[in-house]
Image 1 (cartoon, helix red, strand yellow):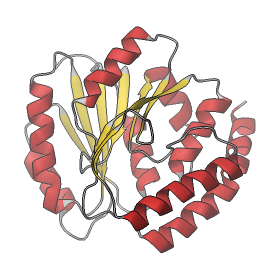
Image 2 (image 1 turned 60 degrees about the vertical axis):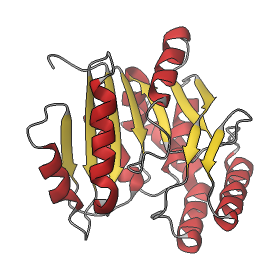
Image 3 (image 1 turned 90 degrees about the horizontal axis):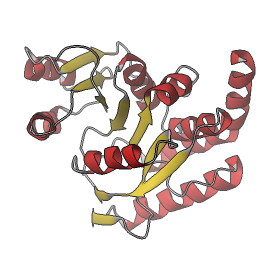
Image 4 (image 1 turned 180 degrees about the vertical axis):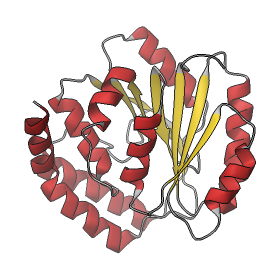
Length: 247
């Protein structure tokens, strides 16, 4: 692969040793048949199960794969930001290591970008009427997620129905502008990203997706919900301060 790739996939990973091999195999097989230059940037937060060592072994000698090891476990937002700033693609996705949104959705998103030159950011929306939920979360997690999104929309004033879907794509200019400003390290970083996109004048659209709940979520329902709400309460102030400093 010569020159900058057209497509970058950024995947944050923390304690993913059990499913990493299957995910990397699926990525290799899917991208081998994709008629587009590509790279995969795997960002491993400091883990206790050997995820970093496994990732390096499984991708050794594969030019399209890069592994970045973060020395500290600071959170998904930090891992995604690391990868997005290291990516080179004209279109860059971030997605979860469990591949809960099927890789086939990449082509759907790329086709939408191709047909809609005005769109800068494209996000998956599991709440869309046309989304297909292949395996649902427990009713408790599902209700908590719905409540969190409703609270976010009320507190932050954001209109997007599904802020937390781990499948989002960015044109190069939008990615660079947003993630050079993004600061939150925790799970509420998605909200900050979308607010920054709004402040920067980026055009954001959403699409229905297939989605399958994967067991072994790293989100603790009580502890992380409180952290996300805490961040939500201060995210608008953080974004406004960031925009003032960058002007």
